[in-house]
Length: 120
Length: 107
Picture 1: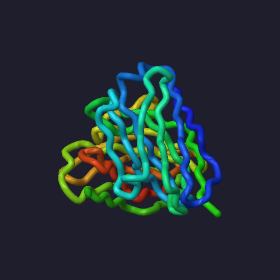
Picture 2: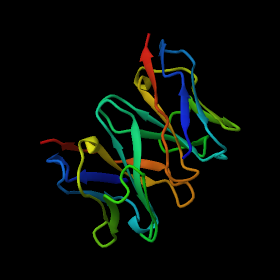
Picture 3: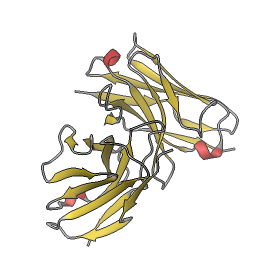
C-alpha cells in the first residue's frame, strides 16, 4: 500500500534552516509528482510546493518562493523540502502528498505530517 | 491567483442528515477541483478529484458535483465518522489554492 512518512521537523530558531524529508513506498516513485502542504496551528491547509514526476518542473507558493526548495531523490524514493531563513509564520505541520496523476496534480495520498516550530 | 470560498463555514447536523457544502471559484477552473476531509488531529484524507471522481476508499454516501464555478460536496446520510472539516482545492493552475474549510459538527 502507498505509504508516505515525513521526518525532519522540530523546534528551530528564526533565521535558521531545516530540511524536511518524505520517504515513499508502495508505488513506483518515478511515476508520480509530489506536493508539500502545510497547516499552521488552528488554521486551514496551505499548498506550499510541487515537483513533477521527473523533477524537471517545480512550483512554489509566493509566501515561500526564494526560501523553500523542493527536490527528489529517485534512488532512495525520498523527496525533500529545504527551508532557509525560517520565520515564525512558517510554524506549521508539513504534510507530504502524492499527486493523483500527471493531469490531476491534486493529492491522493498524505503522510501524517511533521511539525515545524519556529521560535527563539 | 484563483480564490475559493466555501459555504457554510460551519454547520450542525444529526446522524442520518443530508449535508451539502458548496465551494465557489473566483474564475473558471473547468473541473480541476478536489475535496478533502480532515478529522481533528489527523492528516487530511482525499475524497474527490476532478470534482466528482472518487479517490480510493471513499464511501458511496459521499458525492461531488460541479456547475460552472460552483462545486458541491454532498453526504447523503451523515455518519459519526463524517464529523470533520472539509476543504476544497483548485488545481487548475498554480498556486493550488485551498478553500477556508467547512466544519461539520454533531447537533
